[in-house]
Length: 237
Ligand SMILES: Cc1cc2nc3c(=O)[nH]c(=O)nc-3n(C[C@H](O)[C@H](O)[C@H](O)COP(=O)(O)O)c2cc1C
Image 1 (tube, rainbow, N blue to C red):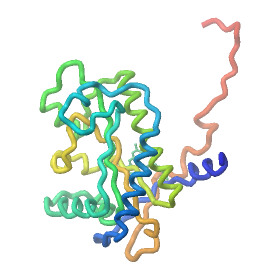
Image 2 (image 1 turned 90 degrees about the horizontal axis):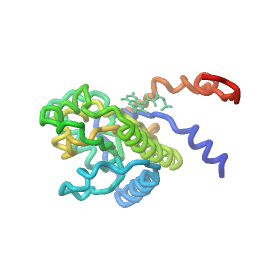
Image 3 (image 1 turned 90 degrees about the vertical axis):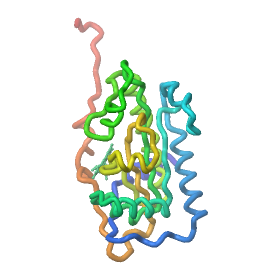
Image 4 (image 1 turned 180 degrees about the vertical axis):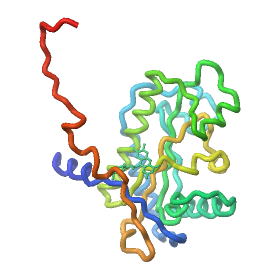
């Protein structure tokens, strides 16, 4: 069992499945829904250390969990709808569009920052979809991000175990204010990842390009990022 889990973790890899035009949506909607729900259950088993700020459970929102992440799920049909919306708005989303044309599902995963010391103005809230993100660099926020990241990793591992090609993207144009508003995701939340899930047989389809992660072969050598500490009881600091 342990070895099998090791294998799945090592097998996980970035696969950006790029289609030049929208793929038809698979008829097995129930099968897809079941798979998505299984992966969401895995995300729900991620560790977390601090509950999100109470402002996220006070708002009139169906998503009032104490966990510091939120998942917004688009099935294949909704990925295609978003694809067409982006085209209609003339947003140049590049590979994000190509992946929406191919994806069976997309999880937009946010993490929930504590409110900045001073109340954020609307302007500051808007900024978070651009380059600079208005969250305070403190321990709680660090741990919120860390927890949300483990939820995403659970999904990637679960997808890999099911032979579902997957990709964690920063989101590119999905961070764009127009799209955030279209998707109806609160600007208080910060997009941590756009997790694409593709059809199992993606690589056998016509006119498809699959791109790997740029750093796939870098950073695997543990001696370059880990050190065994040998401690000396007598050492003075
Ligand atoms: C937080 C995060 C954001 C990422 N965003 C992008 C992205 O926007 N574009 C991209 O090409 N790859 C992105 N990646 C995937 C990395 O490029 C990939 O993980 C890396 O190249 C290693 O390849 P591997 O996932 O196959 O091991 C992201 C990965 C993480 C963890």
